[in-house]
Length: 223
Ligand SMILES: Nc1ncnc2c1ncn2[C@@H]1O[C@H](COP(=O)(O)OP(=O)(O)OP(=O)(O)O)[C@@H](O)[C@H]1O
Image (cartoon, rainbow, N blue to C red; front, side, top):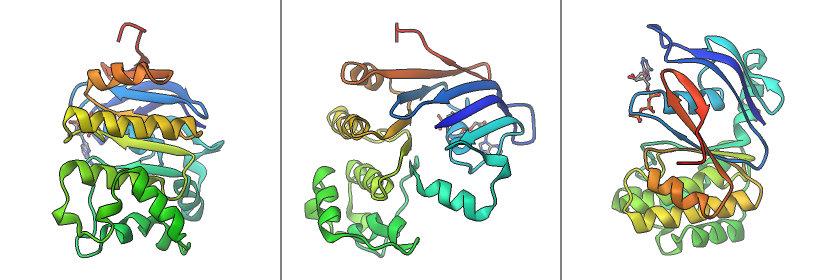
């Protein structure tokens, strides 16, 4: 589904990531860990074509990213939901409108029943009309997940989705992601939180990718 072959990435200085070769297969559940500044967000951006590798090839849905034109990139991105680290919203628009934005900006209709089911699923039914600045950190994170999956993406990439959450809320969000994975979505979560990973491994066959010394490797079962 997403394949890296001997990929390196540099923002202009030395290489941040080197010799990365790995596959995210359909239906898989991966975590990505590594120290702050090691390149987790950068790797996620390579996974949805926001950045292009400086060396090697990234292939997304069987197409090499380097060769795609703008329309093809846009089509490919529609199949990938992204939960960004900072969860930004349009503050003057109600939450439900924010959540449906990925549909409306691409000219698609949002089905009222689907929207209300999704808002209920992330526990935000009562807040559909609320404005984003009035939401708590946990509500924002769950709304960001709802917005990322409203298009029924094949892949969900989440950058520290539990970064601002307490443990109880982190587990609740994890449960949503595990459920989504059971319904077939391929999932990659960048996180520092080893307890979250341990908890996930009790629920799903999650694999852990670890960034160390610019390389990304599959961690052992000990984690
Ligand atoms: N646009 C950019 N231009 C230049 N350097 C950048 C850019 N974006 C990120 N970097 C640098 O690349 C390195 C990796 O950043 P990245 O955000 O990928 O790390 P991370 O592992 O996600 O960090 P964190 O866990 O703190 O979020 C950092 O040193 C960062 O300063």
